[in-house]
Length: 294
Image 1 (cartoon, rainbow, N blue to C red):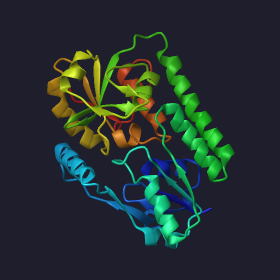
Image 2 (cartoon, helix red, strand yellow):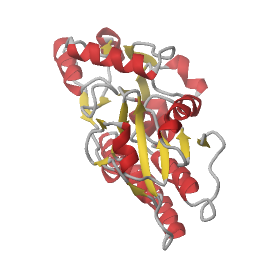
Image 3 (cartoon, one colour):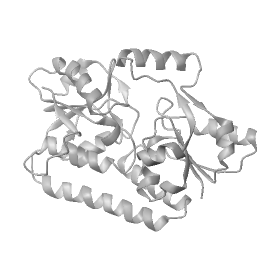
Image 4 (cartoon, one colour):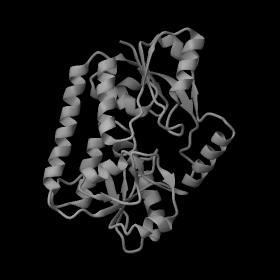
């Protein structure tokens, strides 16, 4: 089966299912093993925001959306040339990836007959269900069941390790300028790690808030998980967040690897957050996973 992934989390699912050799098309944001990068066609492009501040990125996104313009570009001819059997896409967030409707319209225009599977999880359990859906659509349902079973076992081990311990109140900052509180599956990660998420929106879209709303929630710990950034970028932003929470521990988290992409590595995120909240109960996380800044 020839697979095309139009979002980074789907690419991670494909590799976790042992289907990397079947992946022929990806986005410019997908993270691939070095040996595979030259052999995958990029079918979705977008702006390079690496030199922009969070405020500049927010202004760029708001401006594009207000003008009715897309944040991502589908290279339709390249997609058609790959002759895919299955395309993995989403409708969860216009800021995060190309909407599935754009893909369907392009396939109709090109006369392609690929199946399109939209992955739109809002909770952690729905993330696991999306892995099962990819496995079923790609013809490897047993692999998907085994993968999800292993992920659930890891979360059960964390739950057992932190059982009976006080649950710290945890505020999560998903964007820093302007501040956004975390939504979707991220509060589930905090709860699974032995924390009590506060000022979050479990199972719903993240929203812009005032710093006062986050402070008034009286968090014991603040996690900074800026969408689109690994640990270095998260650390830089967490340092700007820390003055808003004097006396409260502020931690930066590798957001793209552990928190914001709905794929198998969310289990790594739960383990890393648990290590922050309950350091004597669970193993220390990798050095590139989290960092305390205040």
